[in-house]
Length: 210
Image (cartoon, rainbow, N blue to C red):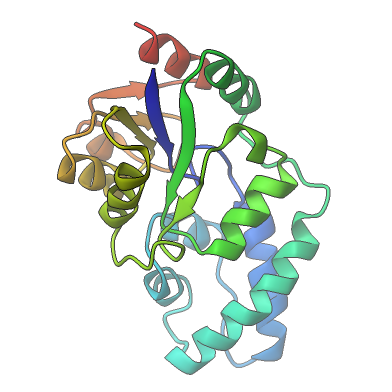
């Protein structure tokens, strides 16, 4: 059985719509700053910490970013209420892998609030064992999350599942095989770096059990 580490955005969910709306609502408190497009938000997924905000709202100061992040906590909870943002087939894939005895968990560059919001609003927490994100492990890069998961789970067969180059880099740092989602936010250049690219969540079940 494998320990399967899942990125969140572009791998399990697409929160671009509600995230963009939440950021716009937060920016009502800072009307001098431009509101980012959905494409700007989507292209920022995969960046860690303030790097995401510097990409999405480059005009904002660090102090303004801190304020936006605090405001976004509340506005995102509101915009996520009742929203299904899982990619088609994700729930069934998680359920199948969990029932087969694989250990499922997370390795995302997001913060704790966002990770918990996704796990709880999408009702996928029961499938996850000790989920972690960059903030929860106090890390600087995604490979640090894999280090923490490796300490927790010990010797095992690990698989990193993500959608961006950062997922590949983290997996390579630990010599883990890496699977990227062809339906996520990545591109052909990033897909070429992976050991395997899946076109649907069901493809992962077949690949893991090959």
